[in-house]
Image (cartoon, rainbow, N blue to C red; front, top):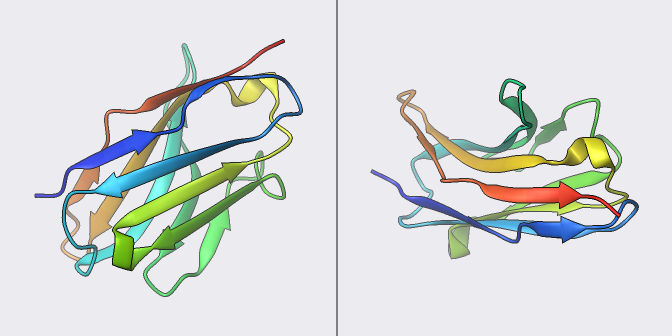
Amino acid sequence: QVTLEETGGGLVQPGGSRGLSCIASRSLSMITVMAWYRQAPGKQRELVARIQSDGSTDYSDSVRGRFTISQNRAEKSMHLQMNNLKPEDTAVYYCNARRLTGDEYWGQGTQVTVSS
């Protein structure tokens, strides 16, 4: 069992930046991929970005070029740097971790609101 905790959410003005962190309760050695998802009011949860154990990354079209995902496995953490934020980025952001077995874990989520 892995517990994930997200931090860093809050209110940001359009065009601003924000960094999110996800801290795991245990070693990430058995985790093959970590990801950030988000869910806006009235919408389905969607993938924002993911990072494999080898460091390779991919992003949704809506955030590519603005968001950067990274990880520090020694510190059991993952980060999402969000730049040039837009009102449509407003959502609850969730940390996700998946094991090779297919088991996956979710954080409780952190609210990001982009508004002037």
